[in-house]
Structures are given as C-alpha cells and as structure tokens.
Length: 398
View 1 (cartoon, rainbow, N blue to C red):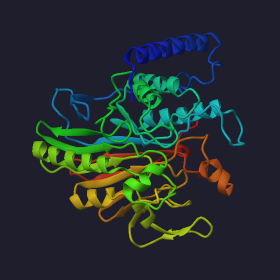
View 2: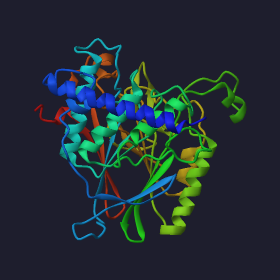
View 3: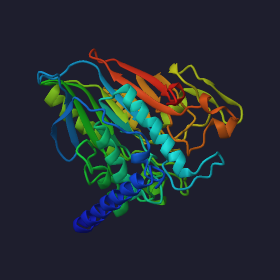
View 4: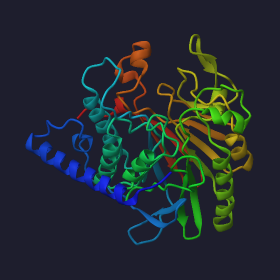
C-alpha cells in the first residue's frame, strides 16, 4: 500500500477545519445543528488521567499511573472496554429517531460511563466508526477523547472498512492519532491489518502489572486464504488471526519476559476466537445453556458465537505459553458473558450502540433490560482481574 504523507496531512487538516466550522454552526444554532457532531452533543467534559507514556516505539507503548509525588502508583488500574457503537449515517432499525440521534445517544451514554467510572484507559474493540464519513468521524472521536483527557486505544472491527490494508483504512487509523491521548500504533507493517500492537502497564520502575495486546481481526475469509491455510475451496465466514500475528504475539511475550520477567497478558480483538463456543451449548432456534466446560462468571448467550469457521490456533498457542489471562471481544451484540475457560477469561464487551440489533429487535425486550453498556476491568495489584458489566440502564437519565 502506498502512503501519501502530504495528501494525508492535507486531508486531516481539511477535516479539522470542517469540524471547526461545524462547531461554530453548533454554537450558533444552540446545539440543534449539526446532528452528526457527536463530539459536541454528548456532554463531554474533562475527566483527566494520572497515566503517562513512559516509552514507545512502532509496535508498543509503555505507560504507568503516577502518584502526586511523581512515583509510580502500584495500585488498581481500571480499563473501560467499549464496542459496537455503530456510529452511522443510516440504520436499518425501525426505532424512533434518526441514525444521527441514536449516535449522539450512544456517545452520551458512553461519556457518562467514562465520567462515572474514571478509567485509566479506554479500549474500543471495533465496529464503532462505520458511517459514510469515517475519516471525519475518526478525527471527531479522537477530539472527543482529547476533551475527556483519557488515554485510549482502538482495535478494528469487521465493519469499519472492507480493506485489509488499504489507504482509506490507513487514513482512518491515522485520524485516531489526532491527539496525544491516543495510544494506537500501526504495528509491524509485515503483519495483517493495522493496529497489532502492545500496551505495557508498569507498576514499578522495573516491573509490569500487565501487557495488553490489540489485534486487527479482519473481516471475512478471502478466497486466497483457502490455499494458504489449507481450507476447503469456497470456505466462507468471518476472519481469523493470521500466523504472523500469532508469531508476533509470542515473540513479544518472550521479549517482555527478558526485560521485566513473567507478565500476564490480556488480548483485545473484535471477532471472538472459536473457543468462545465452548462456554454454552445450543443453537439460535432452541436457545443456549451452560456447557459445563467453563466457569460462568456472569452473563448469557442469546446468539451463536460469530467466530471464524477456521481456528488458526491463537488461543491454544497463547494459553499453552501460559501468560494469557483474558480475551476481550465484541461483534456479537446480544452475548454478554464472561467465563473462565482453561484458566483464561473469555469476555464479551457490553455492546454500546443504539444503531445495532439488540434483544429489542430479536425478542421484544424493553430497552432497559437489554445489554447496552460497557465493560470495566480492574487490574488488581496482586495480578487478579475484577471484570464487571456496566449497563447503561443503571445510569441516571440526567
């Protein structure tokens, strides 16, 4: 893929000027127009962070949370995970309001959770930014996170772009990096997609609390994968992590061990790995019940796991290596479980978008009973995780 640095710069400067003009119109109309300006319509205000970037390169960022005296805080580190906000200019849903109004509502509820929970880091696990104006919304999302003053990162979903590694996908990811609170790194250019990178969290001068690994899990199985991975010709379905991504992950773990010693890891991606299918038995027609193969921490399954039909071996490799502690995914909007399987937490991030399908559409549920929300993970000083559902229905409507 050919990158055009001057054109990229000019495009993003043009987007910034466009958004500046949109904000002027927003103020002139008392906030009534334009409706697409979710960064202004969601009640964002400064939250702030005690996190700082310690070091960085093309494939990783090392951060730490600091006390007022300038020393590293070895205490609890809180990560808010959001997914499937489906910011869009149109929607197939028949519910009240326009797609733009539902975008604003989704972002308002997300911002309220960030204000309430005050996370040290926000991670988006894909399918957030998928409108016809993705480049504009990428910059707008970055500007919103800068207004909040919270560090954040992004793993691509299957709806943001139809490209594997094309220029428009590059532009979108570049748009996320508009402000200094974005931790996104493009990653090794030899790997599939964009955004395969690590975030290392220090809890001391020479120790890590956790290492987080973000992956681009792709979109769909392409015909050329069949020969490359020995799949039957004509195999279709959702994409999977590639050999190169798995090898990179294992190599990074070894490098981190040499620098800091043994460190547990958390993996973030959009499309769930096939092992999620082992938590429940059943099907879409007859429903799902716990399989007994995993310890269910919370939540339920209401639709089939939307994983790839091909298991590329990430979970076996990562779990076998011993450092993997949890996998966080999105994609399946009405599944919201967290389960311990083979010593690893398999977690569905709560779906946060009102432009998505939900149990309102599928089963006629009331909105307050649905799964809209975010997931909060507390990294505890002893190495344990405390993972919780933070549903929008629990928030004060004001």
